[in-house]
Image 1 (cartoon, helix red, strand yellow):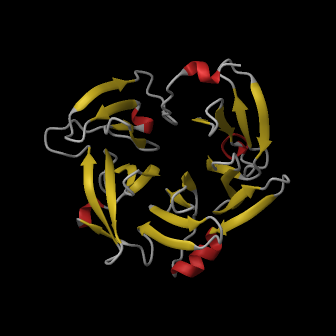
Image 2: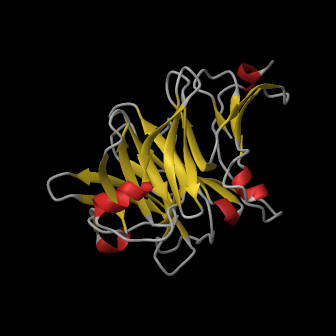
Length: 272
């Protein structure tokens, strides 16, 4: 679930990839008021996991094209779906070879008119140009990816990527390749050396209680400068300051996966 760009409804997806094992043939994105009234249900063929909404209300999503690959689809004004980007083509462009290409987050950056497309199956985030569908650059664990500084700040099984107002990238990630402990990490882009420089992190510092989360998770930078970290299957949410102090810490006893955290200023904006 997320807020619609007009701030008057929620968007949520029912991806039949997971429920019916039909490669998303029956997937939909719903526009809903806070009382549960469905204003619109949009067919999003192939929807596997990730989707986003552009400033003009256009929907874009990751669509499964096989059990092991997907493309980036855009719903045009006339109702047709256009393929913007193909993982199979990217495999050729990047010089990599893999058998599984499945996404978990799609973030649209209006400043660069591009998407940051996160693939948990590849431990990689790809920046895709909106107009041309070109893979501009990629970060992570596949061929020809940018480097990390320091080396051990590489993200693994990341989720919830976003571009901040300062131009840096923020994501929730496993703290290392061989642990399920989760960190929030902010990276600065060093274009000259093609390096992601880890300028801020939270979760693995000495004295900090680690939270284990096998899947999902998100990190959001709030307007007060703090970071909201959703730990996904860790069933926990924290707000932390820039200095790493915990403002509040909420744990759900049910042990359920938290799919998404969305900050809402006023619930009455979503009334029918």
